[in-house]
Image 1 (cartoon, one colour):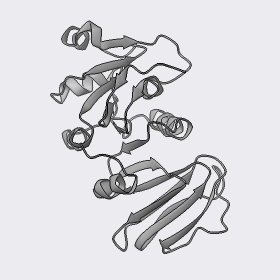
Image 2 (cartoon, helix red, strand yellow; image 1 turned 180 degrees about the vertical axis):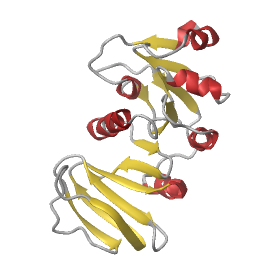
Image 3 (spheres, rainbow, N blue to C red; image 1 turned 45 degrees about the horizontal axis):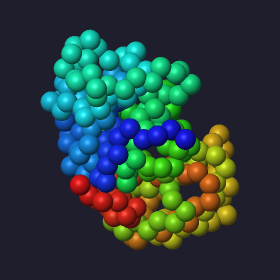
Image 4 (cartoon, helix red, strand yellow; image 1 turned 90 degrees about the horizontal axis):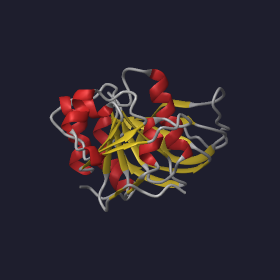
Length: 221
């Protein structure tokens, strides 16, 4: 087991080198104020005016300029190449949850790697901020008080099944699988409940962050 480097009783934001706006980072830091940069995410954080509290990764992307601006004791190099920088960060954080910003919108392979890591490493739970979406791994049971018509997409990361209420197209009896049946663009009819067996990503619109955090029982800031 990897000992934690970043320990917090509040949420932690991990920033990557992908597409991330001031609004993305502000939304993340409002609820998860400790900022960890995944390698070259340090440059992205500095460009947005937020020096990271920690930088973790293999350090093949961070610029020399960023290195000069961040205290050396706050840069933690993990030289192995068997995991991504996001995984290197996530496995070294002990916190109630993580917000992930800057991992969508540019390199699709990086985004897919982050989603795979989220499914493989259950703790701490992660909410990924994408340009139009929030993504999180479904717990075994969750209740989401969504407005009727809210888009609800379910994406399996392995064999999965479940039972739902409050979805326009119920999921009971469906065998989900990558490369098989997926559940994009379902819609809420009101209060949504999900009981999920297996690894399933839930994708919702960006403006549901408060609802998601309440449903997952995460502290807000």
